[in-house]
Length: 289
Figure 1 (spheres, rainbow, N blue to C red):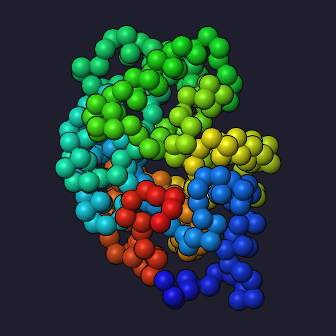
Figure 2: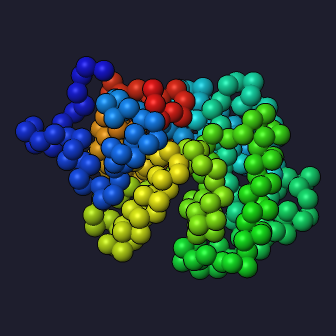
């Protein structure tokens, strides 16, 4: 792409470097990029990923309509949910790029799911949802339950999609909880989702310090994007413009939930094209292109 994005900073400033500095701890170091097999000189990529594929028919339908509209790169697929089986068939038939969306917190809705698995997940969910800080505290008494539920996810994904997932993230971002990270449940080398990228002032220093330390730990064993944001809030428009600008030279993932009416309208309407300009959405989830 030759045309530059609309300037949002002073002309004499380098846009990408200034935005790098403004997002605390967001950038993957050159050493980490080399370790992950990413060419440090590569151009950027905008990955638009939809969460909750297979959760129910309405969610899957909304996501698939956005895929057909060309505004999504990939999906994060739930297993053991009411539409998981059908959604997997659609993905295989249509070539939808699907990763595994670990679900430790929302009850499994597949009527064929075993009672033992549901009970193990219920124990894990009860702990994680008990307190906002539960996810950062390792629970030794739940090690076996986490391992059991995680292994069941992998087996079911392989059954539904015919291969192991190259990419794993988590419902409510619980793939970042202490029992998953410290337990090293995610296979080495998989692509996983980093913490949200925040500007100084958006979160407390302690919050941003913890997120930065966790991202560095993840980068030792996994492949990460340079930045990660949610699509919402959609206003002000300058927020998305800043995010999209980063993708000219960096790998940026944007998490979407098309089942939400405002996000669905944005992803299927004309506004997103106006925001993107000549920036293209990646056709699949890839750190190298």
